[in-house]
Image (cartoon, rainbow, N blue to C red):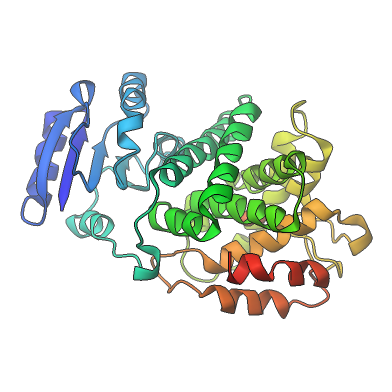
Length: 348
Ligand SMILES: [Fe+2]
Ligand SMILES: [Fe+2]
């Protein structure tokens, strides 16, 4: 495996070389000089302080070339949520602490995703996923830093995803995202692609498609407020953790409610994407007559996405099994919509 190292000081690079030399073929550069131009790089490891503006600027300058490398592992100060979000905004596919063990680092580099996810993938899908993940990370950073969210950037990133799904199909999109992205970023990119494909299969007009992908891109923005240790926890959540997670629709609503570029409809979808028709959802326990179509479509796409996501600690659920679970949620999800979702779930 060809691994390229980029670091903000020579000592970090030499430490990494020592860790990886036995298993990987290595090249390395200091961050300001980095041009990341090698053709056959399988992975890049970036070891840099992301609180340093110069480092961020230098990495932004090479971001187009970084996007061509399939695996991009950033080592950052893990305690700082903002550094982690910044790493994803710069295109990380994984983030580890600044002092990972050799096994942790090799585990990420050699991470063998299931073969069903490992097909060769169109570069435009990969680039749209890269841009989408960066955009989601930027909106998380804006929520954490209480700064303005760039709604236009989100709209552009969503449009690009919609074009890829329309052009290359949903299956390719799912494979790209599950192969290259993790955690909340993977989830939001999958939900956006699935929601778009659901809209396309229902024959919606292009302006309605835009409403769908904007709502999907923003739907979990409130998760910016949930500690990573809870968001990425492999096992079951305890009651306290569950309460924190279930606060994310309202946190998202609060983050967006004063933004003039967000429509009331999208705001409603962000707040209500965990409501069920029988009133058993959260946060407001809405009944069917108060849940609009857009939110119903988003909820189905969201649940399906959560079921089929790639997680390193559990096998990927097959699409037909995930669809059977949706079908079993009678009373909670709209039956005709679940029927219409069949092709999206199983075929497209
Ligand atoms: Fe959610
Ligand atoms: Fe979600």
